[in-house]
Image (cartoon, rainbow, N blue to C red; front, side):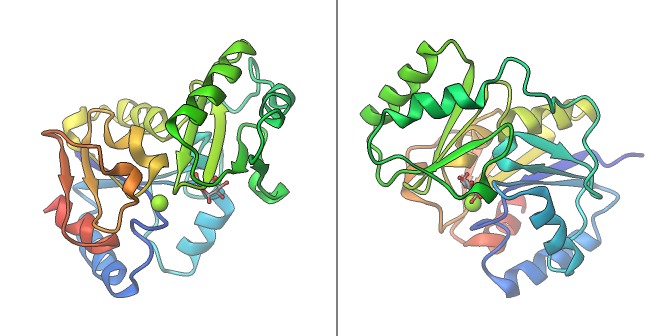
Length: 234
Ligand code: GLC
Ligand code: MG
């Protein structure tokens, strides 16, 4: 029988950050392959995730959700069947022109930009500023997913992309109901994922931007990083 449970975990600040706890996670997961599927959902590129797996630091996942949920790949870096890869209905130049009108929003380096993800640094944006940005983007007519993390990183993705949408897509494709899915995270780019109807685990070292997330399906662990993920699963 296929595994009936799915863990969708963020990497930086969630599974990564505490090597001793990560080793415990690897040991636990090694005995769970019959029961659990594993997906990493991260702002990193797929190449960067594959390098960490190849180094033996992370177990091999069933799928990799990269670039803040713009892309899904199989464990060897191939595109995941059925998940959009195109830029149809998406206009990166329009996004860039739109955001250029805002002061203090600085494009991230070229290596952090992809065809389906425009990324910026913008320190301590208020909710009002974020709303202004969202409104300006809506006025372009584009459907976008706007993600703000760590009071610093601003990502603009196509409207149907994002960690939550990607996790839903994978859970559906494996026929897994939401209550069989645990999502784990630590920052703003995990907020949608943690409130998507899955069981959410927020690790103790989470950013203050997740403080307001609460509810019967959310577990706040008293432990940090991979120890918090294991605690939430337990
Ligand atoms: C990763 C990406 C960056 C993104 C951030 C938050 O650090 O490299 O582009 O803004 O995650 O989602
Ligand atoms: Mg993180």
